[in-house]
Image 1 (spheres, one colour):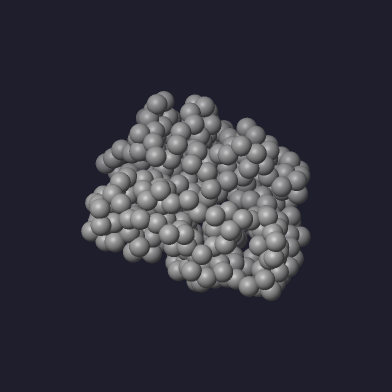
Image 2: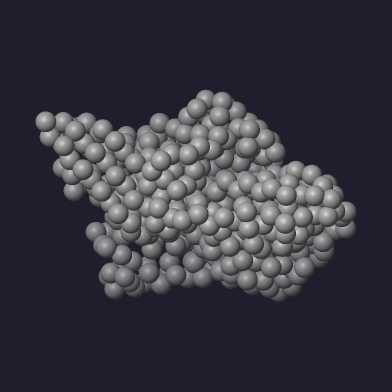
Length: 431
């Protein structure tokens, strides 16, 4: 009998702290654990008793990169309770703000966290020396995401202009047009990024779990749909039913809750790959061509290709946001109304907000009292939803590698790559 233990303590190049433990006995994977070792951060308790207006900006501190998504998600939950209907212009601005965080996140993940895996580098710093032009372009893309969030949200992180019912400030016509030019100028680099990540060899595996993403007829939604779908199960549900459709559960080896589809009991993946599988037809033609050239077509189930999916989303977002900026700059553009906050009345109730954060779907359910103070809050972050599926995919990968004759060092390396391909934020998973 032979037994091999593979332990990765504090996985490098991810946000937060997580460990991997594998036990292999006689050539078979006996145990496989994804350990989230972050302490509880208690955001759900922190907002109890606070006025509704404070909650989005407290919850935004769950994540620096995804802060825009948490702000908008909380605002949507509050508006659901108050019965607030915002203008098309406000919806467009919210989409811009969320996409700004996509550019921030995807640029950071692809080049700082993921790329070194495929370039035989321990970190991004050798890349800066080996290919300073590529490094500078990557930083430029991240900077552009910061600029877009700052333009729309008033800050590059933890935005302050988005409020219940609208925005407290809106960019000028010249600012919109200048931003549109900057976004369009990055598209050539974004096409090259898709090709770059398509050129990296990855193990041929398929996730055994389901996938879940926001859906809307004829659109690629990130912040303006109430509908989520488990793609394999074919279960489509309103965000208000998220806590009924998603089952969170405890495991002894993780500080983060794990999640599965309640109807099927299957774990699931949420993120760029799930979104592209769900809304392929609504990608821009340019992004669709780049994705098809990279061999990324639905149904794609290899979780390593989440990296390529993020690169495709960057290309799609640049064109989409440039178009939004130009339309918002038009005096008589297509968006009805203005972004000034609409009036509303505070009332008690329960509501759920739902957006597609860069790393995947995020749900916030709030219960407010008559004074608009929080009675109860539930947050479901993308990484918390992904942990169970990641653990399952780690086992699939390890079993394949062992069957192919891989030794322990190779198994360890490839499992680490898989964890990073999921783009996890373990700090967010314990929220």
